Image 1 (cartoon, one colour):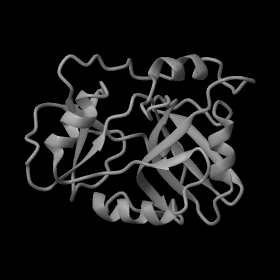
Image 2 (tube, helix red, strand yellow):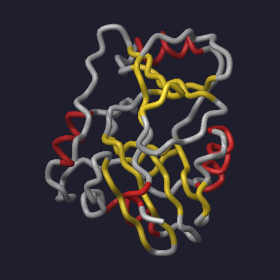
Image 3 (cartoon, rainbow, N blue to C red):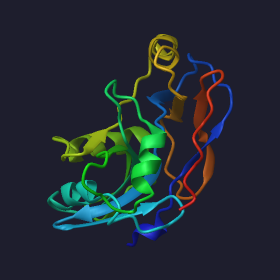
Length: 206
C-alpha cells in the first residue's frame, strides 16, 4: 500500500444549481494538492504530480507522524493562510519553491478533505459521507498545522454571496454525497463552481 498508488481524484468545472439534491459543498482553496501517508512515527507527502514533498513541509510531516495507529492516507491541499483565513497562493508558491522551511518563512496548513485508507484498509469504495465521518474521527482533535475542511448542504447561495463573493475567493467545490473515490480520475461527481471573474491559480505540476 504505497502513496503513489493513490493519485488525487480531480474535479470538473461546470455550472451547478445551488439547490441541486444529493450534493455537499466546500470552499475552494488556493493551494497545492497533497496526499499524505502517515501514522506511528512516519509520514510521507506527495504532490499531485507525484513529487515527494515530505521534506518541503516539515511542520505538517512532524504533526502527522505523531498520529497513532495507521497507516492512513488522506487527501487535501497545503496552503498559506492570511489574517482573514483566506488561502494565499502567491505566498505558498514563494514558500514551496524553496523545497524546505527556512527561518522567517510562512508556515503552511494542510487542509484535509478526504480519507482514502483508514488503519490500513482501503476505504475509497465507501461513500463520500462515510469517508468524511471517519476523517472527522481521525482528525479529532486536529494535529498542529492540519485542519479538516468543512462542508455544508444548505444555504449555498448565502455562503457563495457572503463568503466567496465578499472575500474574493475562487469559488466552491460540490461533491456528490454518495460518490466513491477514484484515484487519478477526473470525475463529474466533483464540480468546481467558480466566482465570476476569478482567475484560478496555476495547478502544481510537481
